[in-house]
Length: 376
Image (tube, rainbow, N blue to C red):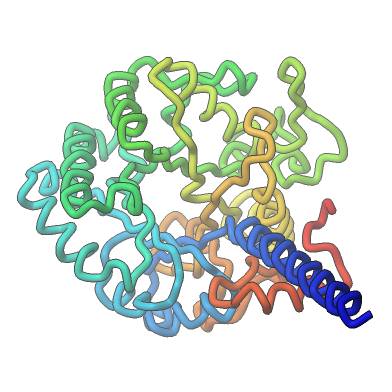
């Protein structure tokens, strides 16, 4: 009899251990899924809180990823030991300098190696929205790939090429065909610029960063694009592309980028959405309610995937952290998810906290009374 009870105790303990392990894995998966969202930290305002206050604000609101548009030293210091994953930009103004390998090595030493791993740098975005044709940034295009390569080699020299990925961020003006999404392609006049970059991304196993704004697509063509389609609120499929149905514009735009990459024939490249947002004022369709609906739905939506990449969570960075009163035109001043006084503009949450242990998440799961996903 004693042996029997001992066996039952062992069996129960093993069962409990197995259940705890399963719950732990489930909680970790939920935390990863809930943490697809980051926030872009821009500083073009004369009324913004200090970098240390901003990082504390992120931690208090479970923001576990951040994009920083330049290697601001105060922000990098504040990020030490925060656990926040960082996309760090090489500003466009530095591209020409970093086309020199020595300068790139020094930039990496000063702004990356001096902080890593206390600052959890995940990506380096070498340039943002450089347009090789017909733009004020066009003269910089010749320096983007050399700067990427030089930064990558400096990272690789320290054996960190698998921990820190190097890429660049594009906007949607480089897409020539976007409809239907499966026919997505880059403009013929930018292929000589993009194809070598895509080749590098395949070689280095790095993602492409894409700034995806259904807002600007909608305001550019409100007669053919419905507001519900842009806001994730269309009740049914709006666009059929073969067997794939699109119920929102975000997926359609993003899949046109996926298709454009695939259609180059160079190789598979993942896409990280390095910016997406909706303004709350200052322009056509720029209202608080539209912004609240778009951003709230976006946060939920990216936990899944697109019709072309189903069941693949979409790492996405909201633009931006604050309303920035020194930007122009007027609409650009109203993309913040926080006011400069650190008050939340919108009621939604950003995901699980990276600082919590899985045991805390188990308690959360056990006590949860509402689904973690709106579509659950």
